[in-house]
Structure formats: C-alpha cells, structure tokens
Image (cartoon, rainbow, N blue to C red; front, side):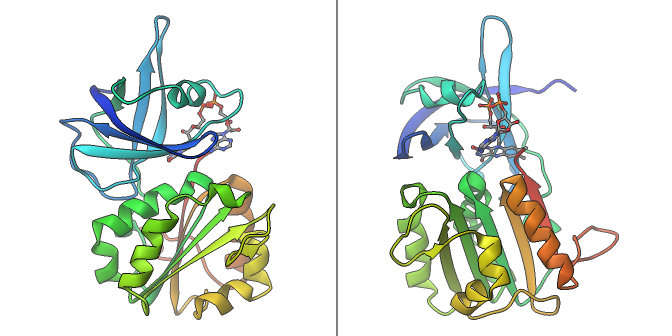
Length: 248
Ligand SMILES: Cc1cc2nc3c(=O)[nH]c(=O)nc-3n(C[C@H](O)[C@H](O)[C@H](O)COP(=O)(O)OP(=O)(O)OC[C@H]3O[C@@H](n4cnc5c(N)ncnc54)[C@H](O)[C@@H]3O)c2cc1C
C-alpha cells in the first residue's frame, strides 16, 4: 500500500551529543495517534523517496518530535543529521504500531525499558499523561553506552519532582562510570537485583507490566529473563505481561 506523505518543516533541532538529536517538525494533517506509535519520516531524493519508521517522541499535535541517532553508513540518518531548522521533511499522514498503552496489560506498576533512542515512545507517553491514570508506579530505565547519550534527563527529573513517590528513572551506562547511574547493562542489573533495589519494586507477574524498546540484543536477553520469571508476551488473545518494540 503506498503511503500518503505530508510535508513538514523542521522548527527545532536539539543535539544531545554528536550524532544524537531530536528534530521538532511542524506539520498539519497527521491523523490523531496514540503515544508509542510510529510514523514514517523521509526525504524525496531525485532517484527515490527514502524513508524509515520513527517512534514519535511527543503526543499528537501540530509539532512532532523525533529522537534519532545517526547510524554510521546508514542511508537516511546521516541525511537527517545534516538538516537544519527551516528545512522540509516528509512524514506519513497516518501513524501505526501497537506499542501503546492500550496494547499493554494493566498492572500495579509499569516498567518502561529502552536503550538509546528507544526512549522516544516513553517520552510521548509521559507527556501525554494517560499513563499516570493507568499505573500507580512508573519505572523508566534508559540504557546507553556513554553518559553523554543520556538525553531528556531534565524532563525526566521534572516528572520525578512532580511524582516523587510514583515515578522513578534509572540510567544504566555500559561504557562509562556516571554519577548517579548504574554501570553496565540493564539486563545484568536486573539479574543481580540492583535494578529492582533502586526502583524499590519488583519485575514479577502479579505486580508489573513491562514495555521494552530498542537494541535487539537487549530485547532478546530481557525477554529470556522475564520468561524465566514466568512472564509472557502480551497478546490480545493470550494476555501476558510484556510488550516489545524492535527497532531493527
Ligand atoms: C517501529 C520502529 C520505530 C523506530 N523508531 C526509531 C526512533 O525513534 N529513533 C531512531 O533513531 N530509530 C528508530 N528506528 C530505526 C529507524 O527506522 C532506522 O532503521 C534507523 O534510523 C537507521 O536508518 P538508516 O537509513 O540510517 O540506516 P539503514 O541504511 O537502513 O541501515 C539499517 C541498519 O542500521 C542498523 N540500525 C538501525 N537502527 C539503529 C540504531 N538505532 N542504532 C544502531 N544501529 C541501527 C541496523 O543494523 C540496520 O540493519 C525505528 C525502527 C522501527 C522498526
């Protein structure tokens, strides 16, 4: 099925670290979508239309944020990185995807686990607000390689200040030692208990729902850990405990 494209304009470009950035695109006519869904973002080249899916890092509105990492040797992201405020960009008219709260089981607490730009859907959910009505406790875990990749830290701290007893965010940095951060991988910290200790809640079938997004190795390892704990992937017909968004 061919995609319908809407032209947008970049009105803001925020660089978090070299190659890691958020663009805010002003665009009219994108159909209402749920936080966690993705749009196609692309450029019209002389030879073809080049596009890829990106989670929208903001709720539905006239301004849409995309949190992107430049992939070395990638076809689209080096071009997106080189765009400036005022440049045009295409977005698809309709978002898709089931990585949303309405496809996530109810529970006492929700774990939002993401690596790198896998944080994007959670930023949209936190800004939208419905998540606060659905879960009593929210634990966001952001895994990155270097401290300089800890984007959105100030915004997350604001939620922490606003909901001190209900919101907890934990940064796991695998290649640097960061002040106030867990050192190492998210999956190691879950297995050795340090993640749950910091969050002051458990990842367990009768307590939690889990959303996971990002790097495929982390997703595979995390799924295996959850399955060992008796947790299963949530599907409409066979309710379970966790949902997954794979970026590649
Ligand atoms: C549902 C969905 C949502 C997505 N949302 C986002 C998002 O919010 N932000 C974002 O940055 N990307 C996101 N992606 C990934 C994005 O669609 C592209 O794959 C990515 O930007 C690379 O595009 P490219 O043309 O530069 O690379 P390509 O030329 O297409 O090369 C692709 C290869 O690059 C590698 N790759 C892809 N993504 C990454 C990555 N993040 N880090 C390291 N290697 C990677 C993989 O090996 C992949 O095979 C999402 C993907 C999916 C399926």
